[in-house]
Length: 355
Image 1 (cartoon, rainbow, N blue to C red):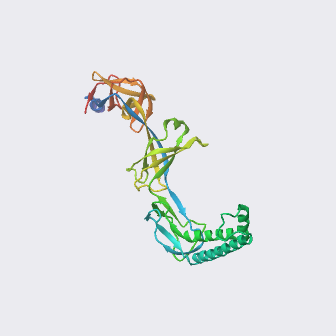
Image 2: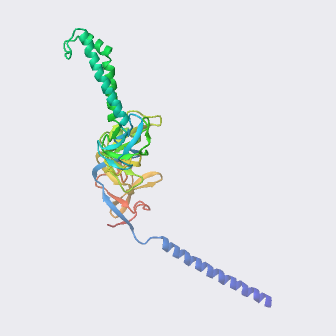
């Protein structure tokens, strides 16, 4: 009898525990539903759809190249006597960069000049021997004059003199244009090479950006289009320029080379890696922010506001830039477009417009 009573009490206890557990689950479920289901309307911001000027934007990568860049070399080998600048110095056109020891060059010029004077005397002797007065060559026939110059060695002496004079003058390197000195590694009192560049002058007046575009993008650009050049080393900066050259050849990768002149204000360096944004105005079009477009089953959808509810619209976009799409089909001018708060919207969902 006692065993049966124990069994009865055990069954009652198990039943009570199961009832409490079910009650807790039901309460937890009700609380979960209350948490998930929103009690307020969706908050959105809207924008009236209007026609306005649309700037197409094309993005590419490129490099900055100096508009003027020259490798300076000495015309002859010799000992470097003076170096007047260092790497990074700004120089003006005609400013001295460096010069060689000119003793040997000046001596060579003097010897060449003496040889030229002797040749002049030889030329006069030849002409006098032909019966022409000295000092007056206007009446000498061209063929006689040519023969006399060859016989006297005058032409050869003149050529050697001009060469010696040229080498002496170019023993001093000068800046060919305003710019910055680069790649200067020589030291005074060392021999200068006539084959290797002594230094490089990088012009700062105008920098050029070289970049490529796809063959299919060629119709979207033309000479004169505005570009914004942004160095990867300083993403907060942007420098405006204009396209000046479009190479009329497509390479084996389907790319076309393009060049733009950029106003760098001395802050861009030759060889910098940059991002290029090409802007071209395509006239007035229906334009919407990119945030207004959401994807539903792989299709572009824009919600419009009508009578306090979100309306679902399939659209077709055209070109794009960093912030906007141009609308080809699906919307009308004057529609009120929902631009934010549209990620989880459904058709006919009530919304509340906020500023």
